[in-house]
Each structure stands twice: as structure tokens, then as C-alpha cells.
Length: 240
Image 1: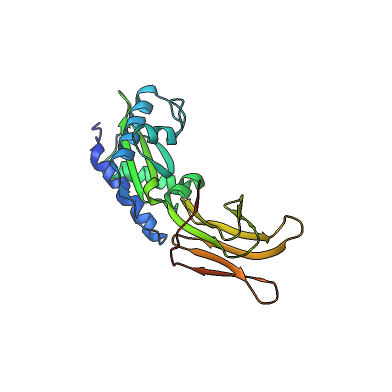
Image 2 (image 1 turned 30 degrees about the vertical axis):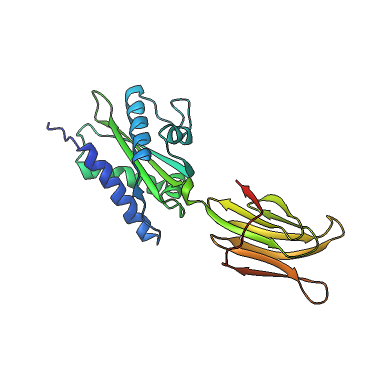
């Protein structure tokens, strides 16, 4: 029986192509190949193939640790693994299709395929010695350089409490605060003034890159929250 032997490099390229085709079907932007993510994916695929282990922590590390070790400074990084075995071997594109189709059918892996804010990808494939078994590793990332920024300008004479991405913050009177984040997250303005006696606010937003949220007094003692994209200088910076 003739055993098919895939071209590993071309199979890795095909996984990227099929992934981007699927993202396009979901109305998502394509991801581009990153050399450091590719290095991390290939190294882990080789480890899995040599050790005959199969898990996201088989080497005692997480995928984020492996990406960092490869020099990838990330905002977001996720990982998909695939094990494909066939005694007849694999045609190059069939190996790629089997891996991607398996990910599409698994809720967790599919979620990684369609993560909206990732921009880069790395793929590595390795063969188990003496078997027609292939390990595929797919890493998605958004680099730290693509953190987005928004500002809060407290134009009130009272301090303002708010939550961003579930974490509580406070803006002093006349303070401008800059937030840097990896994904758009909920921003909720809660209160102006002391914790128990202050005015309750009802502003809930999805903070995006370039947004400026300005709080100012309204006639009658209320609070107006203006939202614009005009940049303002910051006097305090919070990073997460």
C-alpha cells in the first residue's frame, strides 16, 4: 500500500488559508502569519510528536508562556491543537482540512477560530516517528502594540466612580484618565460624589479606541456624559 506523505510546510500554509476563509464566512478580518507565533507553534508541535503527549500543558507550560518564550509580546493569545492519524497517510491539503474541520466542529476551538480581535496566526505541524500521526498547533494572537486607548475626562467638582471590564476605578475632580486595553469592554459610570450620598449615574458604554468620555454638570444638578473621539492630554494612566 502506498502511503501518502504531506508537504508539512504547504499544509501549514493551507491551515492559514482555510482559517481565513472560515473567518471571512463569519464576516471577520483575516489573520496574518507572524514569525514568532509560528516558531512557538512549530516548537510545541515537535514536542508533542516526540513525547507522544497531547494537551495544552504537556510541557508544563501554558500556550501564553510558549508564545512569550518565542518573543511574542501579546494582548491576546489562544491555541488550538489537532491530532490526525490515518495509516494511509495524508495528502497535503487533506491534512489541513481535517485539522480545520475538527476545530470548526468543537465549540472551544471554533471560538478561537472566530475570536474577533486577533490579528495574527502561527501554525506548526509535526509527524510522530514511525506512525502516520500528525500533530498540528495553531496559535492566534493580538500583539501588545495594538492595545487601544480611550480617555475619561471628569469635568465635575465631584469624584466619579466607574467600572471598566468589571474592575472599579475612580476619577478625581478635573482629572483626565487614560485607559489602555486589548479589547473593547463595558464601561459603566456609577456615581458622582461620596459612595453612599453621591448622585447615581446611568451611563453604560462599550469603550473603543479613540473614545473620549467627558462628564460635565447639567442644569438642575444632573450629569451629562459626552462621547467623542477628540484626543485629550492625560494626567494619569491605568494599564491592564
